[in-house]
Every structure is written in C-alpha cells, then in structure tokens.
Image (cartoon, rainbow, N blue to C red; front, side, top):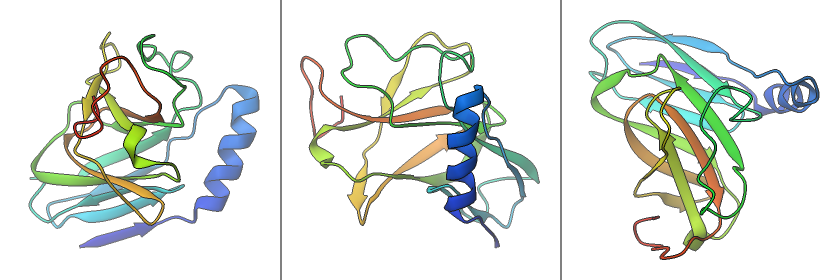
Length: 164
C-alpha cells in the first residue's frame, strides 16, 4: 500500500494566500490496486487495496468558494457556511470497496453535516454519512469521488442521527 503524507501547514498557508487571489489548491496523487493513503491539509483519504482496478490520478482540491469554483450553492435552508469544501477527482470515480474520507472538525457532532454534490454541474446537495467524530476529525465512508463540504448548523427538521 502506498502512503502519501503532506504536512498541513504549507497547504493551509497556501489556501490562506490563494483565498485572497480567488485561486484554488489542487494537488494530485497516483493510487492503484494496492491502495494508498493521502493526507492534504487535514483532509485524509484511505483507499483500501482492491478499491481500484487500475492506477488513477487523484486530485484533492480545497475549494475557497464553491460558487466561484463552478459548483452549486449550499441550499438556502441550511444554516451556516461551509467550513471546508473539497473536490475529489476525477469526478464520477467509483470504488470496489468503500474509501474512508477524513475531514478536520473541532465542533459539536450533534450539528455536523457533510454534503455531497454528485458532479460539478449537479444542482443539488445530498447529506452523506454516517459520520464518526473523534480526536478533532470527522470520518465517513464514501463510494465515489465528488464535491464534499463539511458544515455545522441546523435546518428545519434536522435529525442529528442521520445528519439530515
């Protein structure tokens, strides 16, 4: 299994600097059938052996502004703003085995939601989960690459157990 580790400090400094210019950050990594671990700025992907049939160049793009990056706005009935948004590419990549996505999180888990847009042109966001929270991280299994955003807040009819 391959292991790719990046210190979060350079990425966080780059994101802060690029936020001022409107640019996004998007490192790429090649992962194949043996699986691998990718860590970028607190975002982690654990791709188990057998999840991919061939080598794939994986992009992890930290998005400063969803709409400026061409993605749909978070629904207006959802309180708060995204605290972290990422695009995992290539969009539409699916896995033979679930992949673990880890996002930094330091709040109360009762109001946590991770939303997903199926593709860059998808007009709607769906809640994904379940989400496990421990040691400053929110962890969930995903079955494909897409755009994910983590946020905290409430909406009418909020269900903490399902996240939606």
